[in-house]
Length: 447
Image 1 (cartoon, rainbow, N blue to C red):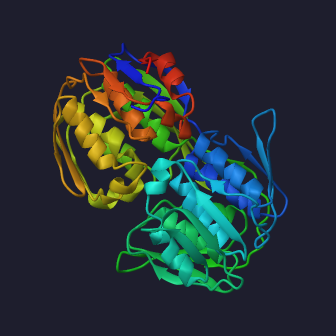
Image 2 (cartoon, one colour; image 1 turned 30 degrees about the vertical axis):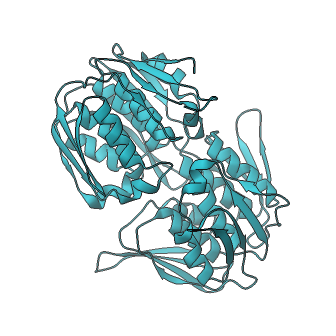
């Protein structure tokens, strides 16, 4: 444990009750700032996630010349510079813990004839960037990086970006989005072919700002996304829905803590992000989807979640892209379910903010849960009752690991401790007080 750590301990909770709103969707918040920064006019963003990851993207867009401010009423306003109009940053861009921010901004920078320097925290500096550098290099950008394509790195964008027809070797919304962002300044059409569909926030928001984007599902099961380059993007109002990845934590807590009933308002229900809730419903979860609507091209619902028994299921690998960030919290639900839950196609979890697959397996085992871990799979053998708990969990600077095990502590027989809760602020500022208002017992402990 490092000396500035903020340990948390989560104890068994009474029934959770109340209504909450999930913080704004992180993926949509990043993109709203970036596309607003490329649009002509002033974009108003309502409900922006004000976590550290997104605030670092806001700082980066200011460094690129966009005017970004927050009004007293919480609305963010971005005055853009137009496609191709980015200024060269005077200083290093520090993206903190955000892989999304780093990879998407690398795509943005690759299409402009300027040099940008990127860095991040210890976790981000360990994560691979080569899969973004390869296609962006094919479009004319040049990179200098640490061994293995790791941050810190420099990118000098192309003076005359080339349109690209690129098939992703592995499904990745971040790589797809980086290519589309670079393709905005290229003439003609840039095409990205996905082996399976990934979250489509970039495509939806590009259309919202006035770009032409076509999506074609091909007979071989792949999906082709085609962007017409050099559009003029026009400022647009964006209302950011609640992040389903964040809503997952109070939702699973409400399912597991006996007697709970929690309403979670304004949750993004994009079908390419909703795999966790599909899976929970298959496990027998009592979740009602209410008040369906659409905002800024994104479907939105309210969730009413009641506690009840869950049964183990086999989660199909093809669902992984729609819930890749939610496997840690699904594993907590699986630990309390009746029977084994089999999760496959999880290789991507090895290169997130931490090796999430390894962290979940080690943490559950330490809490008395029987698990099987493979290179890209996890099997959790639930006994239909709360696990023993009682462990100290190493969060490894990973917000989702910290929050997932805080939820497990709400239902386990013995308290669960997390060595550092500080990273939670990157995606879910206010997580601990919000959960405690519902009836959780999570406290910060002296380091």
